[in-house]
Amino acid sequence: MTRLYDPDRLYEEVAFVAYHFGWDHETVLTMPHWERQQWCERISSINEKRNSETGSGGMNRGPGGGIELRNPQP
Image (cartoon, rainbow, N blue to C red; front, side, top):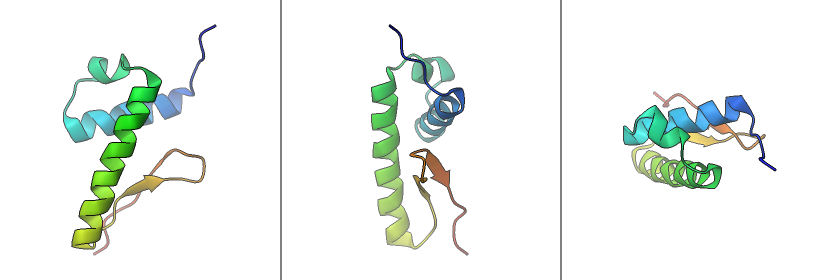
């Protein structure tokens, strides 16, 4: 049985990874879900570390587990 994922979550993950790594849509979309999630976690960790060093805003997981986008603090 194939497990289907929420399309909004899938687009969010693909856009997040593609944006940060410059990978094309097809490459990211064909990754297994667990691998996309791993890359999202790694990118988020990098962003959080960089943001804490610079004091700017960043991206965190929202209450539903999705990626919460925040604007940098002025």
